Length: 145
Ligand code: CA2
Image (cartoon, rainbow, N blue to C red; front, side, top):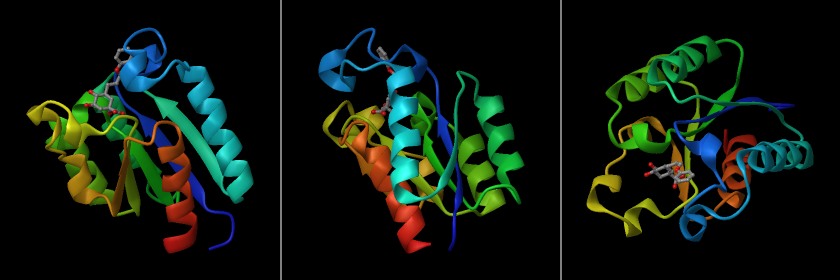
């Protein structure tokens, strides 16, 4: 597909990136993550809209509104990954190609992080790759869908 439009969503507390737990999430801040994603999109020749919210309902509404406006979704639902059936249902409802991203390797962490509801509606998950995971997700969408 020529010039895919991709919605990139980041969930709660990712706005605090770089402030704490640098061993898990790295030292770069959220602004650096957005810059990284936009740069990656430019390199891959796709269009991105990058958003972050601490509110589950806002993320659900953004997913709903993506229908007809975007060709795919890249989502790091953060803690909502492991709790939100609402985000899973929204992703299923719009049925856009979706890719899940986690900065850390969630499977190597606490057992409660091993379950992903959102992931059940995603074609693929990139985890433990830091910022690079977002680029892999954009690349996957531009090449595979
Ligand atoms: O590894 C990921 O990307 C996560 O989605 C990040 C979430 C976590 O709840 C998921 O299990 C895995 C947490 C995001 C933000 O966490 C921060 C914690 C301290 C300082 C800054 C951000």
